[in-house]
Image (tube, rainbow, N blue to C red; front, top):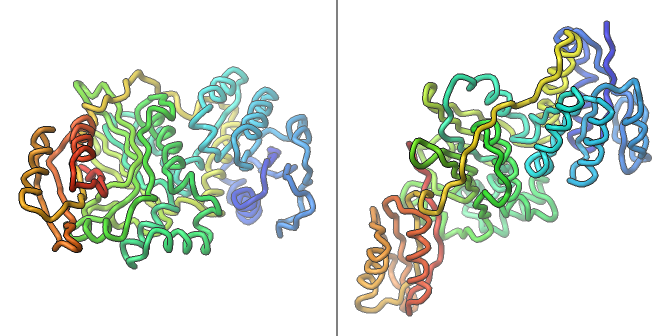
Length: 430
């Protein structure tokens, strides 16, 4: 029985989970791969910390202990961060070691460099765990949609934001209170900026776009907006119209012959009967639309020790099986095509707009004139009773482009007695 040595960079939540699964499911893994996977060494910052793991491997703080170890064939990077992680992955690939990583930030921003380096050195670079924790979305896109034309990918791909929005929608909590609860329960970091600001979801969306559409977008190609400005009043207004608000990452083909790609991370209104509206708390879900298969939903835990570690193990066993069978290394994803990023005129959707309006004669006429000037029409309009001579006006529109919205926003800013309070897109069900 062939023994395959593994080196771990990082023994935090995910790294510890990898060790536990390898230890607890050793017999099953051996039967499925035809080889015995053994953790030989781990590199960590704090070598004295007791992590409660089986003491079957060596721990140190020196990267060279793994990189130059001839007994280690596969390197697992779960240390996080960008620069240090890039350095160890680069060196591991140059030493002709296969690499498994869960580093979404790195793979979204510098992944193509590392993918080429892996190919040049005849080794594998897999990163299933970089997107949506325990949901096997990347492997599904590679293997199950090979013959289909994917037109849209829509995802709840940040568990922290989804937990916060769930508490706001279901329990009427304010954003600050829901964030504090998420931090107390360990669903949000002490500094949650990347999660609530939409950056974490944007990194994942870039990777999804590469697998679904063969595109290689950069961060500046993604329109990113977080959830920090969502209020309890917004949630209540959305609910009155039969919607809830979710932070969504959407990649979809638009334009003539679907030749352009629209990439967006933003809070959006989702119909309460839609499948994504019922993904609660820290869970993730990704809805893939193909021309042949229609819509397919994958849902499950988006983070956590064992779900994410299980995705790492999925990559590990794939590499180990190939090594045992003598199969040459191949790219995780080899699909590439040229898609231009959509222009503001091509980014079209229905809108949910909330205004504060002075309760004076002709105010509504003034507002409808602004929207008419931008060629935006309404599907619904609701006004609350005025408080201190200020009314809250909620508008749902027909589809309009980002360019049209920008035009009406400029008019609102210049008008007296009108204030733009909130604006969100409404998820298209198509």
